[in-house]
Image 1: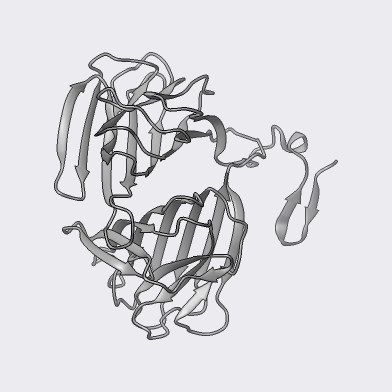
Image 2: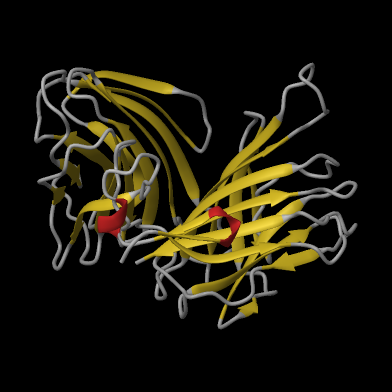
Length: 358
């Protein structure tokens, strides 16, 4: 079909029509995936297209040992990796001249874990990557998940990344169903096969409220949620989730988080995720990733920024953290923002967007 121009400056056409047209890009595209059909010491994703950036989603269903897990790039086992990391925000640690880079810290036995990693991939430069992740910890909302943050580099400057390996470490194996998904992105991409499908996009226009949600959407294994909270007075926005199109108001969520770089705090047996700076009258922006397996606890990584005091003379505030939703019978298919202050602080112009993929 030929390209046609629609209302609102929208453009319609096939991927062939768009090929070679500047400014028409497809975003993150799946370029590799390995899902274990049986237990194995390694999850290897090879034959990767050379992309400027990779986003890597790691969903581990469990292992047979208690240890750290490691990334290797291009099967390199030389002393070419170094890293800076922390666990439960307990202070930075460093390692240099390693044969692999940390991928998961202190995963315990069959406990699931989830991480989101970003790799910068220039063949003639050292490869830089950053990771945010969490492990489930003891099942149930009475125990908070554990979290980790890492910044690593691979001191190899002759080839682009073509193979990414996740190793179970210490003679361990990953359980069946464990998975590594690699997404790639280049600014020159013109494809129309974006990994992330928009599932919900809602904007509040009904006046200030305590609760504002997406309604039901199609459940997917991986969810990416963004929210912009237009505060109307003091507000403490939190996410609540549910299944079957109904928000769960039970005490089935546990969170771990830190505000402005302070020590981690935990919030147990709640009906919401502690994701934001509490009781501020300024706007919030929230970004969250979730692995949404029906038979496992749902694991989420979230980051929030708020204006703080208006003007460049005051730094913004931030909260970073992780949460788990202890439901193990169905996938999340509805999300809402809740003002935990119950002061109707979610104003007109508040937005929630949800993307997903299997």
